[in-house]
Length: 399
Image (tube, rainbow, N blue to C red):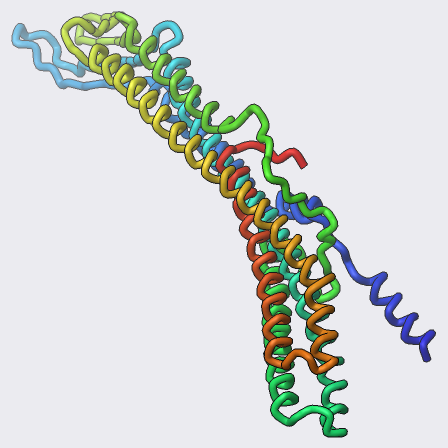
């Protein structure tokens, strides 16, 4: 019989699918709609830029007339037909394309932060689930140990070694632990389902997460030198865009209108070529465009400086929170170790010998449980802060 059970357990183990954090991220990146949407938006912006800055089509114009000469000559038809087109001079068209392209590239760089934020949210959710699972295992172990104690005390009650009130207090605690166990089971199941859905992974009860690749909890996290890399690159592109706009509108002549015309009269045909040159000095458009580009450049510099100051301040706050959480985790682990190795065995022995009341015994167990829950909550807060830090700094982690 034991061999059959072991065989069934072995088959189930082999059929189970264990996923690492790396595999979850790979699946999410492969099927992520954010990346696909960004790729399509990149193509859209490029096509729109080329359409907006393309030179206009040539224009065909014409007119017809029925003429009746007053000098008695034969009447007839006269008409005019011609073609005109605006021709950009030099690299005017290329500069207009570059202005829009740089702004589009800056926008796309900032959109990439959403993808980075999504990846960090997946990492955070992975760690949240692993902690939920460890918490469930801890509560389950606590419950199973208490059930054994309850069964022992139930037998003692039958032999009238303990009172009915003491047994009832133990039963109430057993029921409370069982309810907590059900809550932890539901919590870790929901966090797993959420992670698998966001990671685009087919959900199965046999699918488990490795959790052996969790990030270590450290008091300080060193970020790479390219902090705020995407924001800095986007800012530089926008500055280059305004500089290109200044060059674009500094030209005294940026386009001419060229026309070719054929005019047919009753007794003569005329062919003409014309050119129209805009007199920029008679208007202030180029001057105002240059002023607008300079003001925009200054506004972006001030805005960027303020945004970087705010980001740096938030970064310092997150690093401080991270350090405090790591120190708290270490302190709680030390307290729990002291409880587990020293205090709880002492209280249990004292209770078994009748030196400690059931109330005191249960209060100490509850205190140990509260410390355990505080530890898991602090660890969750640590990882949430950690991945918020990575998203804010726009830098890849060093794992």
